[in-house]
Amino acid sequence: MREVLNDLMSVWRSGETAGVGTVVRTFRSAPRPAGASMVVAPGGTVSGSVSGGCVEGALYDLAAEVAGTGIPVLQRYGVSDDDAFEVGLTCGGILDVFVEAVSQATFPEFESVAEDIANHRPTAVATVIRHPDPAWLGRRLIVRPHDVLGSLGSVRADAAVSDDSRGLLAAGRTEVLTFGPDGQRRGEGMEVFVASYAPRPRMLVFGAIDFAAAVAAQGTFLGYRVTVCDARPVFATAARFPTADEVVVDWPHRYLNAQVEADAIDARTVICVLTHDPKFDVPLLEVALRLPQVAYIGAMGSRRTHEDRMQRLREAGLSDSELDRLSSPIGLDLGGRTPEETAVSIAAEIVARKWGGQGRPLAETPGRIHHEQGFSSELSDSLTRY
Image 1 (cartoon, rainbow, N blue to C red):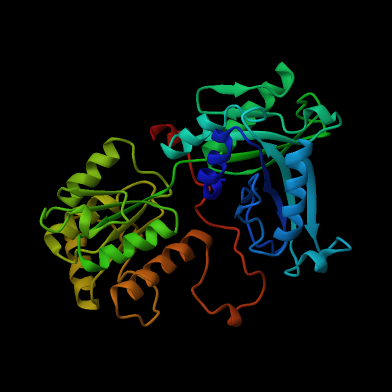
Image 2 (image 1 turned 30 degrees about the vertical axis):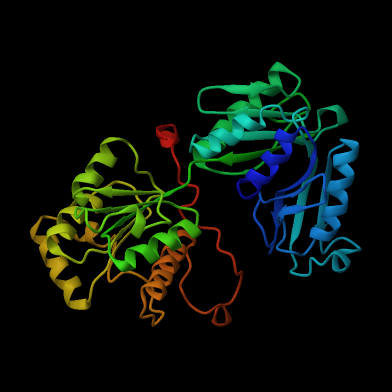
């Protein structure tokens, strides 16, 4: 829902009703993940996507209809349908899309959810998408680390769904949960889609150089909350890094230590060290490589710079296992030369590390295109830190 949040909020605040389709479950090579949404506004305008264009035409008509009737629908699109090729889902995937009418009457908590997302506060929206009693469809709970808004219809169901949703929120996972009609954990009949809106993962870029601006832009594009840090105030300015969320003037190792002490670093954090200057790099990497959990640590520099840096780090007492966590020279071998091309290679390595990719051309690899492994769901209760 993040990508359609502003458009949906405009409709909600106007007092009108939008038809919203959300991917709740995917099978095989589905083009968009669970949580992807498409909004059909009252005037007929569309924002967002559930399939990258494959089924949007069919969903448009259904969303407009649901906005008018107010009756939610759980619709499956895929190769098992007789009209699969007619609606365009020829990739071999299957999508379950929950379509509902969203307005101030149907979703009074929406503004509160939007504020949580905008302010990086963890929140989950648990929506009933299947139930023997049609009156339960579309009911929802807003689940936060320490409170719950709304009700599904019974105390038992609220307790079971809120507990399990809080677990998914802590893990940063979005998926469908199954219960009995009244929230029985061993039963069937009620399905609840839990959309977790964890804070954006962080990218820390150290070194306010031209490459850093390109890396910050790539980080923002990939959905990271980007911080650029450098000890030199003449270089570390917001004007030079317009895509960064914040620009900090501080010694890199001191800033990272402060963030660790503030519990602002988690298992999704990526660290890009671009200064290639020992007086900045070595103290910073001493801190970074000893952190218990971060997703990625990369350092820029030539082969010679890399060897010198590794020697200095060994002399500082870092072990081989700690040094093995460092990606240096940073990035994949794409042959790029410009800051922008280099930033793409760094982003590519981060994505490959995240999902277990090998960085090889897909034409040369067998099996599934999409990898399941990675660190994307490695969140802990530290989500409450934000």
